Image (cartoon, rainbow, N blue to C red; front, top):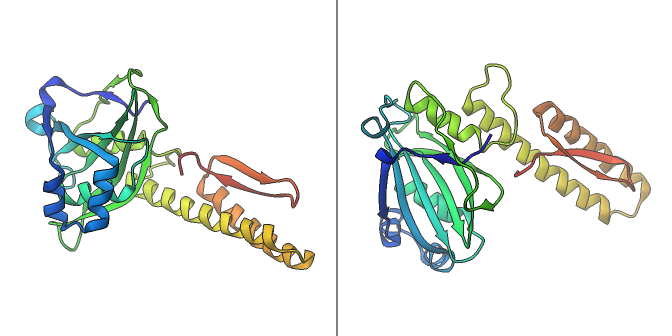
Length: 239
């Protein structure tokens, strides 16, 4: 399923968001400001998906959904830039990154903080690969309210299948756990590559097999191997 949608014309907002507004709200330091300067050409607040623009009822966790296009100076964007924008805008956001005839969609799972509903909790980011700018867009998925719509939009960015009756929050949590286990597996493989003593390599491989089983349990979907030592672990695309 595509992660790129034909948003309704009634939801068009089309306002440039000055970087200075992000700086002011987040109290950005020198390092963050430099990331914006080096990597971001322009931020366009493209669409506001709200009850008055797409005729869907708001929910407590999703009063509106915003769609931002970030025009890049180069083909890279530090996630701290996205986090700064997510911190400044008190609504869930779907980002589309654009650069020289190509684009990618990326977003975090964003929800109100249960202890303080004026603040938002932001997950890790999930995104597509780069595609050509004129790639097919599909109509928005049907939904009974903005909360369901947000779940469906975000689901297109998460590279694991949903388990039976699994909420989007649980799916995101599982995806984050997969990524943590993948990082652990990669650290273990580095240790294996550096270790010269066979008996120690055997012990480290046992650690990797344990992590592999946990990745399989979590539903990681693609595979990485090392033929020399015969170990194997699952790696999820876009993770």
